[in-house]
Image (cartoon, rainbow, N blue to C red; front, side, top):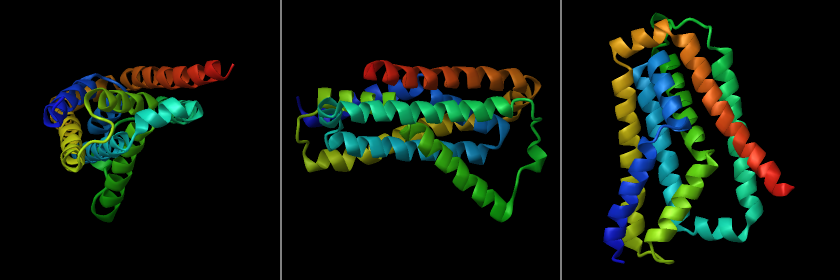
Length: 214
């Protein structure tokens, strides 16, 4: 298969995966609604960097590593699942806290909050073992064992732009006034539902890892 056609196939598959609601979508949506547009975009950029990191690792042979070293995948499941459960706990615990947009920080504090939002986006995406497996499987399907150098130079920034762009679009769409007011009215239940979904995903990953060990 021509590697440049493979690039288009990989990009299309990855975009479909990004548009499917999951932990990353939940996090960027909640930050955009509850905090600010700028922090939502910062989360999106962090997720884009994590996706670019997965791309670079997948091009380096992630699929081979996961096949040859089974405990590496188990470790990914435990660590990633634990992080999702931790995020779910924090969201659920803060579900009753009122949303007060006027109290959002500015100046140096704002820069700090943007850095934290960026880190949150990166950690949420990079800690999801299913994302790692999807990247590894898709790249192994469409590319040869040793891709040409131009493939590296094209795919890494392309995947970053595509994922960061999509999640930034989500952040911009959900941080406008109307969806923010709707979220403010139903914040407790929305946060609890989001936390339940994320916690269930995390717990299932840890449970799958434990079952594999047995």
